[in-house]
Length: 261
Image (cartoon, rainbow, N blue to C red; front, side, top):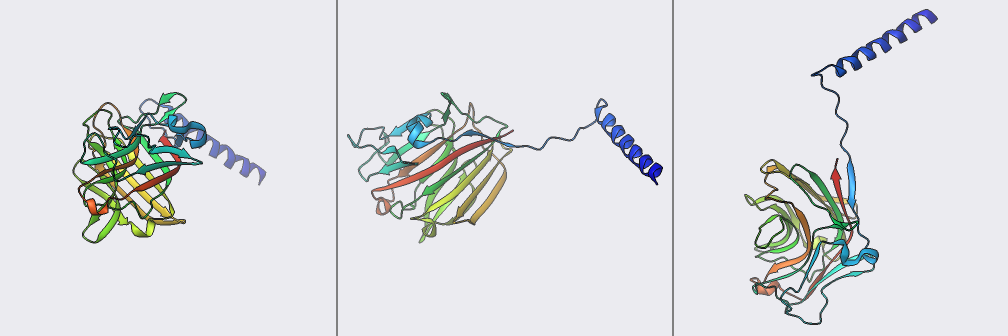
């Protein structure tokens, strides 16, 4: 019995060795290592302040002198917006942060890479969906006048108010859900982007109290313009739907960015 077991063991090892040798032959395909997520950015508001971002767009037109609209508040980043605030284009408002910084350097997204952003947000009922654009997250190429690549928006169509995620090229709706049940409470969101010129993909997840509200994905979409890609957070909205423009705010916490490696 012992000799039989030893024979079986040696035979198995021989077969494994042969398989390993075959994989080492020129032209043979080795098993690919599983991809992993590497955390690249995780700012602490009380420590990093607004230095966690590449830039801050706080009342660029100086329409509200003396007011601070974007600031850390404990473990949270707060974005205030008042009815009187105006951007340099006076038909809209913009109080946003752009890009990410870690270790004194910018953290950029490039073509062919896959990234995941996770964070929690608090959307008060005073921050209303509008029939025009009200964006609360974007990805963009740097530079004035460049269109957003993706947007997370508060959108009103008829009597329905939603939070939605879109890829702007081709006006591709990744998904949308009713906004009101998600307001006045902390919710969690996850945005996963494969950066690609027509062969990109997007996954958008919203969770509330441990319940998954939406988990939607679109593939073969355009998530690249040129140069590099970076995220933006805050409130950027048109004034066209004046009935739904109030003094309001947005809160974000636990911001993290991961790159697939």
